[in-house]
Length: 205
Image 1 (tube, one colour):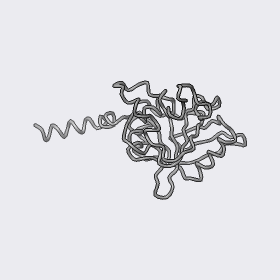
Image 2 (spheres, helix red, strand yellow):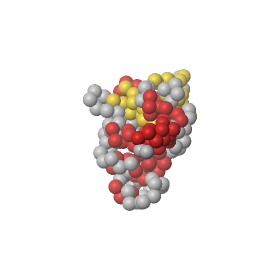
Image 3 (cartoon, helix red, strand yellow):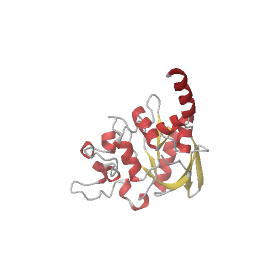
Image 4 (cartoon, one colour):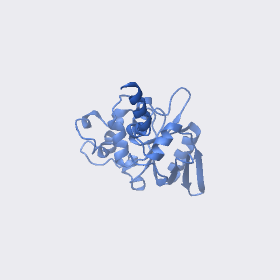
């Protein structure tokens, strides 16, 4: 897994709550036995017309948001089935980060989706509803606005016309360490290889 680095990218907002994994990648795309090629299927029911042409009203088909790397949505993103393909589709489209708000008892992200993101190196950022509202307001005024995501400092800086708007977030420290160092679950375990070997020599002889 690659190390997560500070980057600046275009922000795209899908202003919907409860976006489930079937909306992220419909079930007809799950037949592939490969782990690649899912980016074109992301939000396909919304991105494409019935004849397969682009739906010009959908945000990812608009010129200002082409190549976006920061996705902003509403609460409970990634609910529904546990398909890991949903994370692959978001990531393979080109997104490095997904931002969503928690509201009351409703989480920013579904637990399984958030866990799958962490395992695949896709950063999920939970913000307040007010913070996400402010980002959407900026997107409405300035389509194609860019933001800098700094996981080390735990900030998202939206580079708006009137000056940068900086939003702080709190990442799980274990996940933050894994992403900053590019560690998947196996690599993280191998950090303790010497301790594991010593334990096995004592107890498995």
